[in-house]
Image: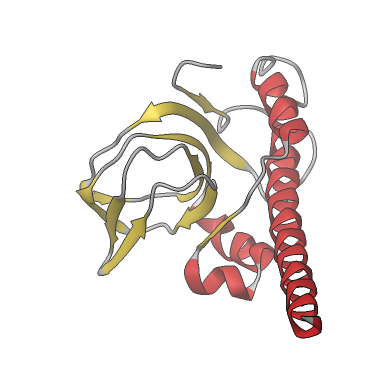
Amino acid sequence: MENPHIYDLSRLKRLVHFPYCLKSVGWMPHHMFIHKNNVIQNCFICICSNMESRGELQVNEQIRVTEPETRPRIGMILPGSVLNSIHATYHDELFFTYSPECTELLLDFFGEEFRQTLHFSFYSFPEECIADIRRELLCLDHPGAADRLDQLAIRLFTELMVRKTEEVDMLSGTRMKIHAAAQEL
């Protein structure tokens, strides 16, 4: 899966009813895409890492700036959004697309805090989830592959949210310990 590839899942038979049905999964290593009034038709959830320089993207009337940092980030682009690149940059991107009908369900899943910004950063990838997704993408002709990928994507998003919360709690605890030690001095 080291080469860019978009896996179309929309035509695969689903065996179970799951509310978050993927349309596609894409892997775009060292990717740069320049948007010029691109209207997004589906709900995109993108995980980006390894940004080479500062990126600026206009989403509707709002500018999203991404700094080249060591932390990866996950973000959502809503259907109907108009994208314009101000400064495109190379990055690695793993993305998941859902039909517009799934948008509210996904926003509810991510929660109110996410709904306000539509993105967050995290420190470490859940390698086991990524490995499971990679394995399933190589077996799309097997019965149930699309169902497993639907659930693995949600598991990945859940793990990222849990890790983000754990990281915030850990940083908060570290700050409190440092503050207590400083008070003793």
